Length: 330
Image (cartoon, rainbow, N blue to C red; front, side, top):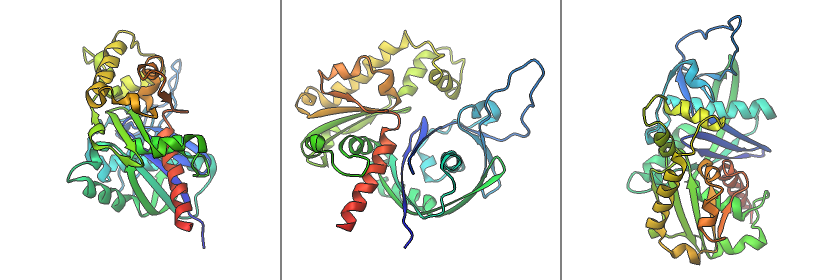
């Protein structure tokens, strides 16, 4: 029987993060419609690193990853609808696996993906529909082209959970999917997770392996809110600002303290002083890095910045898939 290859996939609004096969991939969630041939190199002018050009089976072509918005007509589609398998989502999905295959070689065996979604999409009446729609397009035999080269991927299983849950399992499990003995209490007692992504700040509390509903929720205070504060005159697109921020070329000194107060205000509104009784508060996401000099101390020593906070969720989802596989066999 052919061994299945496991991957963790964090479908973040700012970037897709993929972990598995001893690789960690981050693909910036920039998508642009291909409007035609790119301008060639001009004498006396530099050339930027080109994004990936992804051709879907439908014939549509998109640019993805960093620099995509400079190469075609930007698609600023940050709505939840894209999880249903929109062309933009497919282009990003294929882009992430293209980057991984370029590094580690073709994937011939069946693939199992444990996918992390924002809490909002897994709440309310639409939750089941969202999960089913993701499984419908992702669980399939995929063929696409990237920069005119053909790629293949056979996804035979798709499991879905929340992004903050991925952060918890990254903290609690080791790289074999086994519980780290000294961190078992975080899994069996009460632990908080703060995930600051592009769109949202998500809060999750787990007590004895079960989410605590009243402490769990999301607010639109993600990194996008910081970029909006910087972009008062609306001179730049969200994608352009994101690119500048990632390159450390954006002055956020005035906006950062304002945004920080908004984030901590949301935490206080949802948790009050209850976090003082938590075993730990795990901090993940790109926003956690931006607030690394203050947010851990907000929690009086209980705040733990994850190892590589950006990749933490995808890595935790991969560890969770190994953990579940162990349990299946036992």
